[in-house]
Length: 115
Length: 114
Image (cartoon, rainbow over all chains, first blue to last red; front, side):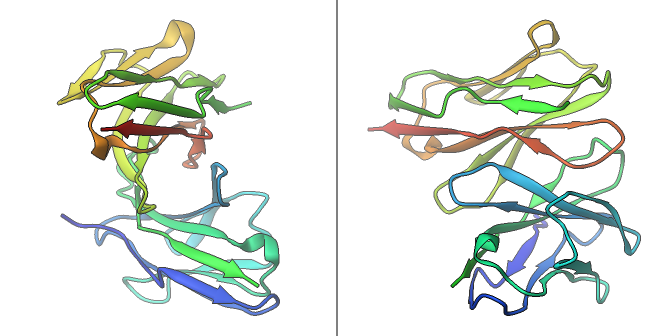
């Protein structure tokens, strides 16, 4: 069964450093998403991406964040200058785009630790 | 405003007990979708079910069942004859309006003890 994959599973970085989190969505899906979950808290939407551009973003997704689909399979989230409060689990998801209520399937997550 | 409330923070049951996880949602949109996801200790988010606002039929899948009631804005999840492998955090989520973002509840941590 097709699944979303994410690398790395755990990333440790120093405050102020740039990080890139990588995702490979399900191959025939058209919409891609990033969410984050700070430890013990709710899952929060960051951004959705369709047709090579951002379709929606939250207030959290400020200028420090960017997303890219550099090729036909990868979808990346970049944090330019990490802060301590960026420490969280980051989930990538994809959906087929069959309708706006379509199901989002999630990857296993990348745990980002900012020291 | 759109909101999902899962009032039960933690539930602990003994194996084979039935357990119901509550989910109450708020939205002014007439078209919306509700979801349940499971987050086992390994951390991934596993899709369980999707329901649209026009389909109030309850659904059963094995030991899992869902009760959708628009009159009370609830979408509750019942596990029958719980098993230790059901131990996880369960999230209810809402998608409403002309956007694709999921709005999440805080989750209910279920512990099934042998």
